Image 1: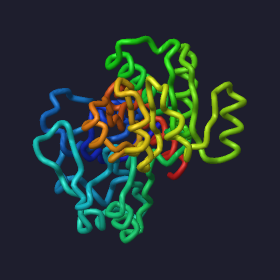
Image 2: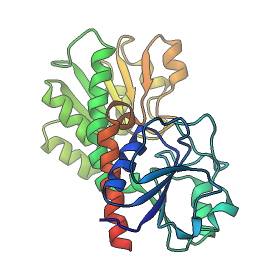
Image 3: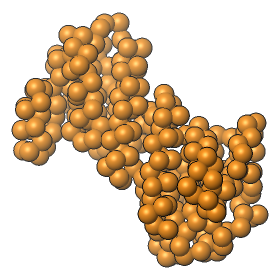
Length: 292
C-alpha cells in the first residue's frame, strides 16, 4: 500500500489515467496537472496547477511517457495548454522525490541532475520494455491487417533488430504463419535467431534481403531503411517502423516511390492504454515501495 504517499501526475494520455486509478487504489494521494478537461472524478485524486501543488511534500512526480520537450513543456491530452517543468519549480522538490518518465532527453536529464533528484526513465527497464512489447506487436499486427490485402499467413516478413520488441515481433508473426527473417548485428543474436527457427541475416546486408518482402518491421532507432533498401523492395510492400521518432526509414523517398511506410511509435498507448497504464503503474508502485 502507498498510504500517505503524495504524488503529482503531470500531463499524459489515457495511460496516465490507469496509473492514477491504480495508485489511488493503493491509497496514495494524487495531484493531477493538465487534466482540466477530464470529466471523470477519480477518488483519491484532485486537479491542480503547477503552482498550488505541495511540492516539498511530494514523494514522486510522474511525467508523460515522452517526458518533456527540449524546453521543458510536457504534453497532456486533457488540457488545451502545455505546462512547463522549470528549474525553479523542480528545485522546490524534496531531494527524496522520485521523477518518473517514459523516456528522457538532455533537458530533463540535466534538470534533474542539477536538482540532485533521481530520474527514472521507465522504458530503459527491461521489464517495462518486454511487457510493452506485447501491446506494441498486437498493434503492429492490427496495422498489417488494416493496410494490406493479403494474409499474414505465408507472407514474407522481415524484422530489423532483435531487441525486446524485435523478439516479440518475430515470434508473433511466425505464430501467424508468416515466413520470418530477422536482421541483427551481434553474432550471439544471429545464433539465437537461427535457434528460434527464423532466417538470420546481418543487418548490414538488409538491402539484399528485401526483394521478396511483403512486410518490413523496423525496431532500430537509426537510419537503416535507406533509399537503397527501398529501391530493392516491391512497391506494394508495407513498412511499419516501430522505432522512436524520427524512426529508421527514409519516409520521404518511400512516399515518392509510392510505398506505404508508417511510423508507429507509442502503440501501447494507442491500442491498449489500459494495459500499458497497468504495466507502468505496477512498476512505479514497486519502485516507490523499494525506495522509500
